[in-house]
Length: 359
Image 1 (spheres, rainbow, N blue to C red):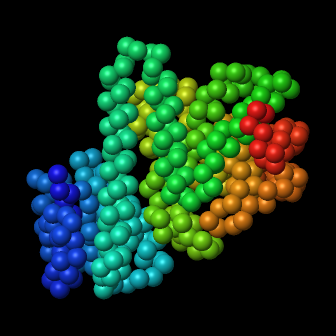
Image 2: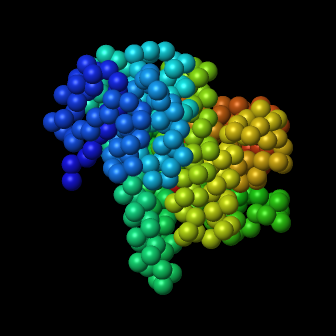
Image 3: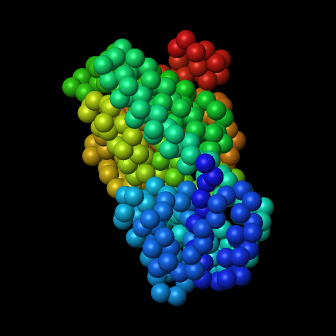
């Protein structure tokens, strides 16, 4: 079935140009005002909305707000369009819920590429959600198969994020390994015995791949930026923690047990909180931060420092990275967990420097 793109723009010239760029690949619907766009949405569900910011009457931000309020439309991806191309405007658009931002006048190749990438991403996401729902219902009475399918879906979701984040391709596996090693050491040393046992360890290992799942809603313009993020861009990317928590509740809420769901949600929401209270999204401090998120924070940063990323070269030396982790104990990281992680030095070296996957 041909995908539908709704173009909303009060400028007839821009509307005609965008239509001519896209009409060979998609069914194009046009609206010359925000009011007309909302009227169209009452009876139609496009696959994507190309929404101009500056319009008389209901402007683009107001249209976006009304779309977000209605569950029927809230999952339709929106790309904002504006002739005002500044970081502040772009950040405001992304904070409003847009998945991308395109400037005017249109560059045909850029517009086609942004529309195609967004539709591909949302098609994959919708297929993923449908797969989870369909398979969960189909095998509800086959409990021995449910776990394997859920695990595969979780890893698939995490790998999709990893691909877009242009990491080395092993972040999911690496962070799971570091979470496992840290939990095993906590059990061995008898720390947090009221919380950390084998069942907790297994659930946290399973939850770890979802810590950055919210990045599926962050634009590639920010996610793949090779240089330092601006202040506005940094505010946008911080939203991935809340997005991740919402996605986990939405997709896994009906098919996972409550303990795992809470663990996965807390990992996604709080893994960027800091022990000293200067993290995000809520500025929690100390033991206000759930233990699972404190564990995930160390595993995530350790791997980020070891491996190459789009914005930096990996350090690789475990001793050097552990020195950075040690310096951050009591400020960024839980000091007790930091000390325990440092005692894993030999196992971490065996895994990172010798690629020993048996640790």
